[in-house]
Image (tube, rainbow, N blue to C red; front, side, top):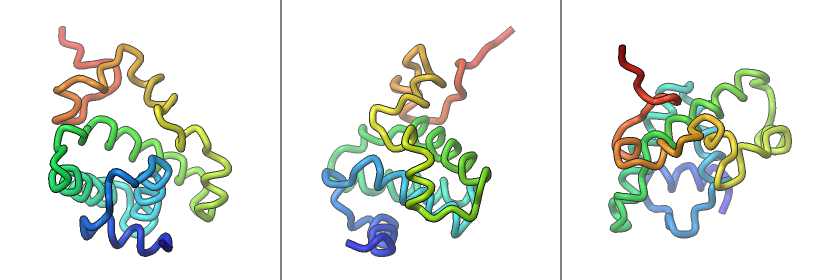
Length: 131
């Protein structure tokens, strides 16, 4: 499957989530960021991923915190050099392409990204400190 087809099928909700690798997740968000900018891209990615997991009968596999945190990490890396092709981006950022992801584990060392609350809504690293 071509990369363009991958993004189209992802947004259409016709991709087989059981065969959709973590690297492909990052590729799709990378592509959407280049096309739509970070905020719209991450929202589009979220909407499609929620639909795909729900239609697969596993809505509990969607995690808002992981989706948003990885999306913004990807956007941050893209901003460092927007001219990189996917292959160059992937070569320069292998830490974003592994699962489980070390960067997310560093942001959420307490495991809070895996809570039910984090699954339902994006939570900031470090929790929600209150006075």
